[in-house]
Image 1 (tube, rainbow, N blue to C red):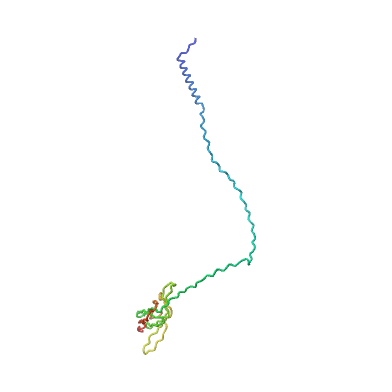
Image 2 (image 1 turned 90 degrees about the vertical axis):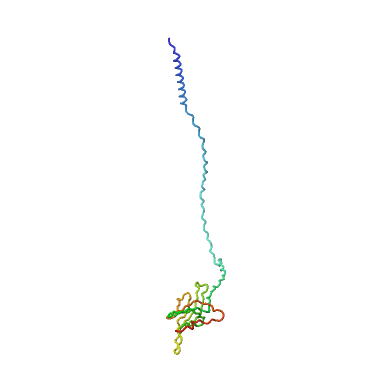
Length: 219
């Protein structure tokens, strides 16, 4: 007769079947596919700018030139003349004239010098020279240099000695003298030299006596 399995074997076999069933269930759970990920929300796309179509260029026709009729001389009117402008005459400022010239003379031999006044039109002697001033002026305000100018004649006239014939008079200088430029028109004399200092007006009242230039001893 067949023998019955023991209770221990039955229990082992039941435990083995239970573990096999657990493994089978675990394999089934692993074999199931994973659920799909949630879908991303749809992205909003920026609206596209509307495409504008350029209009075709407009062809502008070139106007035809029109002939202008010639203008006759009768239709042309002469321009009116400009109004006359008043031109003021230029004001000429003349030089001021004075009555007395102040001169200075030098004897080159003795180194003697003398400054004296020579009234206009009156001869003044310095040794053997006779000075006669014809005019004495000062420069006008419009001139660049403030100067004194005198027109002078200088005669070489030695004094006559008693019992001797008078020597002839010789003109040593004639022309304008400038106080600022003594060397411009100098007196060319071997013994004497002279130049202009300035011009001045005569003092009011009685005329003063001439300086001692006329009383200088003659050579």
